Image (cartoon, rainbow, N blue to C red; front, side, top):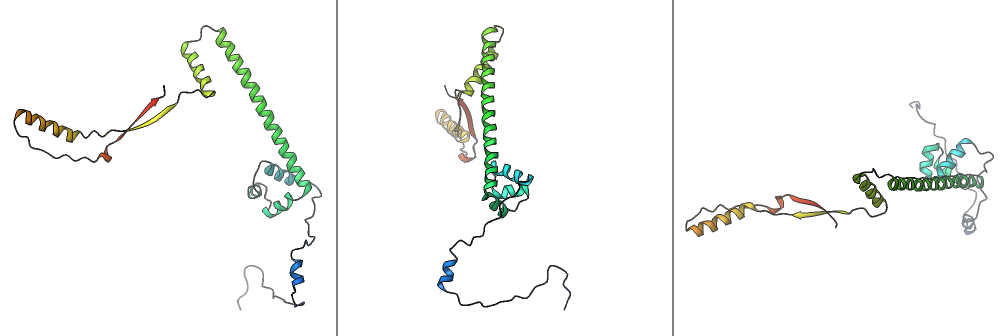
Length: 200
């Protein structure tokens, strides 16, 4: 018998028969066994880190990678009332910060537009090209930008066959014969021409 070099040794399995299984025993499987996770006694830094991750909308797996918690432990913590309240606190803080950022950005935008309008009205030295750029920028931001469409135009020139037909017509007009060379061209081999046509 070779000595074991890895892992734990296999312990023998013990089986003990208590009694026969009845239908009443099966009904007990559907009842609550009264096993509840131990509530959090004190919130630690890892709890706060996990709560911040979950408040941003991360899944259990993503939060597990970020914090080192096992996904099953995260599921247990999410059922805890204290931890739920902590996640909600971080979520409301994030919502408030986002709302504040949006409000401040709106105020800054309005202030900038007002100042720009004052400059346009008061400064006669602005060149027409500068004014046109301001107008284009404003139109673009309000949904009035020029629309450009790509139009694919397939042009099949078939120059070889057309040249041969022209030579035939010329030969008939002059009363002489011209050797005909058959020109075969695959129209699929001709390039597509793309034109950008602005809407008017």
